[in-house]
Amino acid sequence: MSKRERQREILDVIQKNRVTSQASLRELLTQRGIEVTQATLSRDMRELRLVKAPGADGVGFYSSPEEWDYTPSLASLLPTLFHSADGVDHLLVVRTMKGGAQTVAAAIDWEEWPEVLGTLAGDDTILIILRDPTRLNDVQARLERMARPG
Image 1 (tube, rainbow, N blue to C red):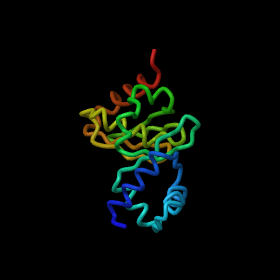
Image 2 (image 1 turned 90 degrees about the vertical axis):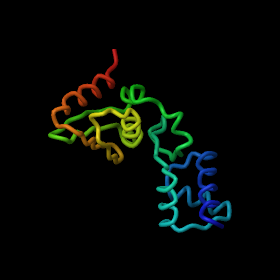
Image 3 (image 1 turned 30 degrees about the vertical axis):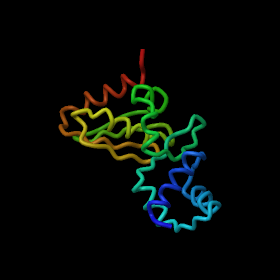
Image 4 (image 1 turned 45 degrees about the horizontal axis):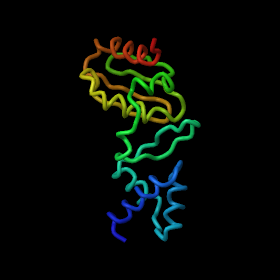
């Protein structure tokens, strides 16, 4: 099986199943007769730009770029997922509910705020790198306002 075919199968599996871990994805691929090493699967997932989105039940699941159009906006995510924000100089650390950081970071990136150089996300923590340290308070306040609408 070619790499392209294998990656097409990976996308098909995550679109038809709620895949919550690499191990379960590997198992579902094995059921389809596709044997893949963990290293190859990790590489394929990275190349396919799969992200783990938080589910309503708090359990994250893999999502593909084709599904990103359906990802809620930052304004709709923050009231549910935002916990806190604090920073220094060019760095702003945002805490989210468990499993929410990658989705919120992607939404921040999609906003294309001119003050934001980029984001790095873990499970419940996002590092926002700012272009100008004098804008830290503005970005932090904007996030906090969006998280507490009304």
